[in-house]
Length: 235
Length: 138
Image 1 (cartoon, rainbow over the protein chains, first blue to last red):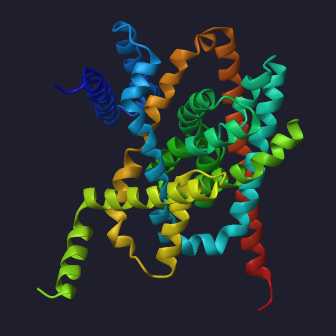
Image 2: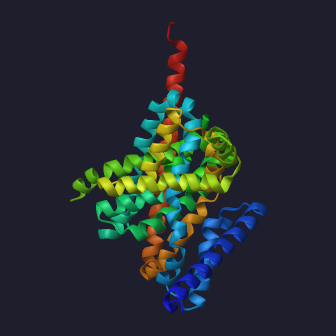
Image 3: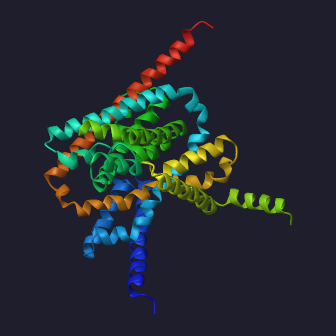
């Protein structure tokens, strides 16, 4: 007789993984037909899953227990960025000083405005700290959040909201403010809205996508390296 | 079959199979995780894996062709990997009220500021460098 607990957890993985992948796939088809920001798979899929979780009286713990392997795949996805970055090495060699200045200004703006606006809104403590690393991609952001005294789980949620909102607002900004160079358009998405922004930038153009992907990884790295310093300043 | 033909055949298979290439990418990630644990580095394992792959590509020990399809597959559906993390909001009911709206406002305004600041800085620097490269005497 196999262990009933083992069967239980295998079923849980099957059920929640199927629900997650199924809804994501469906949401992607819909978004392909009607590409509106409010139909973004990153927005629609979690809402549908939440409805199922609540309807079945399950908890977040049940759900994440069955789908944690998907979150783990963010690790290999980070490694996968080596390919587009390597293929764009000419662009990087030519423009690295410009991109570096852009990343420093962008990251500084992100941390300062998050802190100032959160303070203005009356948010403080771990909640305010959890908001600081939200412009960088999830694996980095959770690392930084833990380092500076935030709540990594919450930061993950803020990162995703930033991604969805950023991908949509990037389009609005580009439609109103003329930005001449593909380099700047890519940096806008990569620094402002990490993975979701990079996906959007790749739809705008090949150069934009490559710059966004590169800048996203580098800005994440920059933040992880700067986190101990920021933590010191906040103390 | 000599060992050389076996290797040539394996390389050929690898260059045409996206699932196998995903396996290779996962292998590099695991190597990165191992190194992070071993040395207690304050970095995500994926970053260490990324640096390893970049170093191997730059030293021409591996070719992009042996990973490109797998990498594209992972990157194209990267949004899926974020989805379970978002559900963490279910455990934080406090975010559903006024606090949630405040946070949303902070995120929206801050993100727009970041995007405009970054794009303007890069655009200005790019044009400054282009102008100076053009007008400098050769």
